[in-house]
Length: 217
Image 1: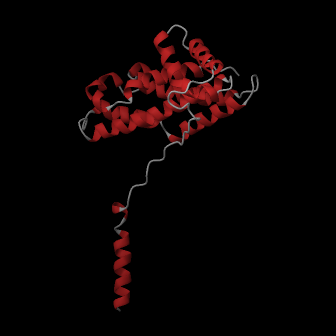
Image 2 (image 1 turned 135 degrees about the horizontal axis):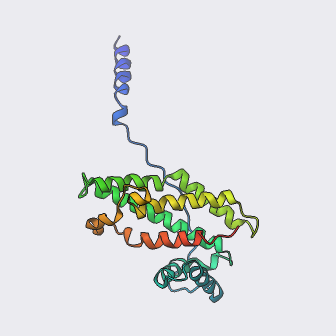
Image 3 (image 1 turned 45 degrees about the vertical axis):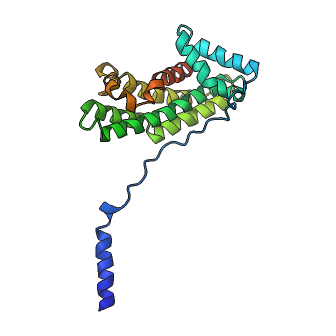
């Protein structure tokens, strides 16, 4: 009888355990960058010139944005091999990493100084959608295939996947009714000290978006 009671107690306790069980970790896309040049090491001059050309072509009228693009991508210059889509792939990967960091920061602020802030809540929801693991992985996988394919052999469907992803990110970054988002990132300035990823997010987004718009099938 004692054995039966013990078993019943274990079963009963197990029935109460789900609320106490550890929550499953949120899945995030695994996005790896190619090897970067070591600090103080300069890439080959031809590779550096190619990065500059890609940035100046994609952002011709924006000197500051073009400079950011160049500085951001220069450490990976030797890995591009004259392939513009590989440049774009790295820019998109950097953006994806920045977005993940930004969302983590938004959530921390939401649990602290921003508790109850409806706009902050909308931004957390918006960037959660924008960084959805399936959409992000599909976009980055599509970029990988576009980079591997030669000119004239790239898939329109793959390009549309990437464009859909970047438009979803831009929608919540621009924010407001005109963009179709309840998130207004401009009103998050009061939390600037707690959102370091926000400092480069706009330039990362602009760089990736501009390069994506210059992919040729």
